[in-house]
Length: 105
Image 1 (cartoon, rainbow, N blue to C red):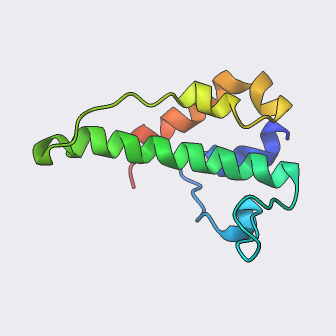
Image 2: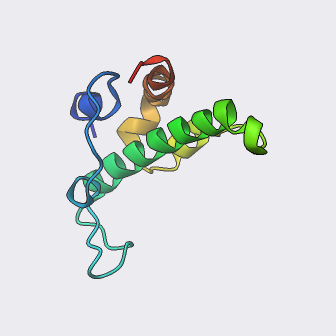
């Protein structure tokens, strides 16, 4: 997967909803069925980025109601996607995911 193919996925200000087809999963056969490796990598990238946002929100807003603050292993999880081009540019993907934390809704 090329960086250009994922710019709309991890570019602040260009959020798109995560859908079943964008992740590449067929829920009628189980969530482990993936239509193609490229779809799986984009889906993993979106999921990790979203999880990072959720973790940040809980760390900031959840203390008052008893949630403990936890670190999110963003770089490690991005590396788990298994896509060679993402892994080669992992610092750039990490930077873009972290930029979402500064992006206003």
